[in-house]
Structures are given as structure tokens and as C-alpha cells.
Length: 208
Length: 208
DNA sequence: TCGTTAATGCTACACCTGTAGCGTTTACGG
DNA sequence: CCGTAAACGCTACAGGTGTAGCATTAACGA
Image 1 (spheres, rainbow over the protein chains, first blue to last red):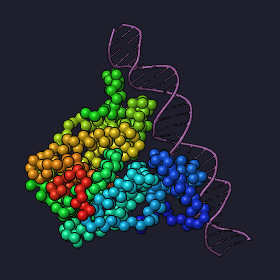
Image 2 (image 1 turned 90 degrees about the horizontal axis):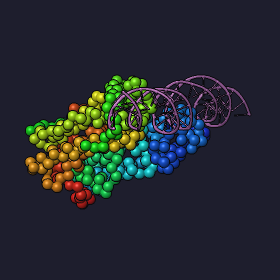
Image 3 (image 1 turned 90 degrees about the vertical axis):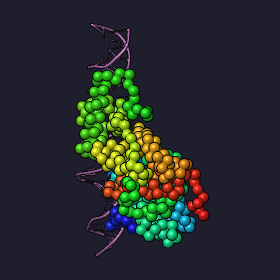
Image 4 (image 1 turned 45 degrees about the vertical axis):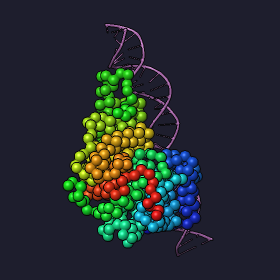
């Protein structure tokens, strides 16, 4: 769907695939057992039995490992929820975002941390979430067809308005995940969409 | 106001203050000239003329340096805007957030990057923004008194709803700062506040 | 089966991180 | 002015990062 985190190899069989599997298994194991701070290339190499220079060659850095692990974990397709209301859909999406950011293995959280040091990780991060936002656009389209939002509403703006506070609280502010966090911001975004239409142009209604 | 990034020394005069100034000057210079990826302790030590072990001892890591630089840059007090409308106030706050995240020197951006490796940086990050959010609460209080929001509205929720998408786009998704970004999400948050009241409890209006 | 060569293993290197131990300088109080 | 000790300078060390060069293994096609 997007550019592969792992470049297409001219000789994908046998050993190459085996090496990749050993390395990705080591990545997951280290993330689960010790968290993303322990995800060093050296540790992955030692645990996987693959030589460290091989890991550096194929994945470049820890961010590359995470990008590949994310791709592997993304093979199961994702469908946006359909609860019957925009606030319900956004709430469910937000709960899934919160789970991704706090769940196990902490691939999403580790990828964010790595994205500040690794261009590969930064690209994978963007790619993953933009893909999710594009797929989630249907919940806004359904809201429009139900009359919960006006025709000009930009789906991505609505979804980011709902999701971003969850990222902010859990990732940047390191706040604990609370029961109502996801739903609270989902409802605020849904209410704003219903009232303002989620217009893309900067309005003048503000300064007046 | 918060715990100082730089521990209170028993001998603050002369040499100690001079060392700190040299080091913080080097931090700013490196950030401006080469960006936060070049902000290594070794580079700061070399540039400042202070020995690297001294930098490690006093600041512990690059995150500690950034935390102290942020404290130094925070000495000028901040007052929230008062444009006459909630959307206008949130828009102005968002523009200031965007400026902080993309401006020069990129202390805020660097602090976020460092916060994933340095507990000191993580604490400084939280402290700085929570302080801003607390000060900004007045714009919501004014909105309530104007009738733009209901009495139970939680100020922090409204402000985070407005700000978080700016963090998300500029920091996580590495998107360029656009003309309408700040205002767009400010208006959406303001509209949601006006419609939903920014309640803190998870409502049941969603699932119905 | 066998040659080609992609992929991996290995050694060595330069750099950054963070710490320990010890000697030296200098701020500060008496 | 002088003694104390805080703060700093210095060396050394144990890791992790990322790269270069060359040797070795094994996947794939002929």
C-alpha cells in the first residue's frame, strides 16, 4: 500500500526470510519484555542471533526495525467502526488509538519515539496514520449522509481533531489512559463538526 | 513556579553562573545553526569551552540542557490573548503554539524529541505546557461569562482540543505549517465547546 | 549439478553517551 | 586574609551507533 519499510530483495527466499523473522521476533520480544528504550540494534542482533552489521545493513537503525515490525503487524486489515453516530464512531476510533499507544507490544509508541531520530521511522509513522485517517473518512461521510455534518466537512480535519488530543495526553504529556479520555474528545470533535461543519477555510467569525 | 531544571547550587556566584551561561549560549547557538539533532553533549561542551564531564554532571544529558534553556527562555511572563471571542482566543493561542513548535531556536521541538530519552526533558515538557494551559484557562472562563460556553465546561479540555491537532500535525506528522491550520482547529474546538459544553463526563449521547 | 552473486559474517574503526575516580581551582564564610 | 568544600578539569572506562572492507555462505538460475 505504501512504500515497504523493508526494501524488496532480489533473493527473498530461505535465509533472507529466516533472518528477517528472527530479527522481527527479537524486536517484539525486546519491546514486550523491556520496553522501547531497550530496543537497541545491538540487543536485537544479540537476541536474534543475526550479526549486528547485517541488522544495520538491512534496517539501518532501530527506527527501521520498528517500521518493518509495524508493516508486519499491519497485515490484518482494519475497518472503521459503525456505531450509528459520529460521536460513537470517533469514540471507538479514539479508544483504538489509545490502545495502540498504550498496548503491547508498544510498537506505535516506540515508533513515535524513534521518529525523531530515524527518517525511516518518521515515514512509517506518517504513512501508518495517514492510511488510518483515510480509511476512517467513511465515518464522516456517513455522518454527512445522516445529516450530522454539512457537505463541505473535511473528514481528516474531524478525525484529527478527535484523535490528536489522545496522542497529546498519552504520548506528549505522558498522562495515564483514563476511562473517559477517548470519548470526551470524540464528543467534542463531533459536536464541533455538527455546529461548524468542519470547514477547511479559516473563518472570520472568530475575530468579530 | 515549577521545580527548576537546574538544581539550586550552594555556590551560585561567579564561576558557576559563568559556566551555565557559556553552556546555555552554546545550546542555543547549536540549535539555531544545526538543529536539535546536532545538540549532543559533546558538541555543547566543545563549543562552550566547558569540560564534557562538567556538562554531564550538572545537566545529566541533552534533555537536561534543553530543560534549563527552556527555563531561561521562560523568564518573560506569558499572558493569554483576549480577542473577544473563544475562537479568536484559541486561534491566537494555536498560532503561538505553532510558532513555538516551528520557531527559532527550536527549543520546544527539541524538548519533545528529547523527552523520549530524558526524564528531565519529559518533566520540563509537561511542566511548561501544563503551566501554559493553566494560564490559558481564563479564555474559557471569559467565554463562559460571555455565554459562549456553559458553566461546567472544563477549560483544559477545550484548550487541549484546540492545541493538540497543531502538535499532531507539526510534530508527529511533520506537516508544514499552513496559514489556516491554527485557526481551523481553534474554531472547531470553539464550536464544539459552544455546542457540547465541553463536559468532562463521558456522555451517553454517543451510543444512542 | 554448478556457477554467480546476493546476503550474511567478521573485524576494525570513529564517534557519542554516561559514569567513576581523583586532582585542581575558586567561591564563600569566618 | 585564609581554610573549607563546592564546582570544575582531567583520564579512563564500558557501552551503543553507524560505516568500511573483505571473507564466507547459500539462494537462485542455467
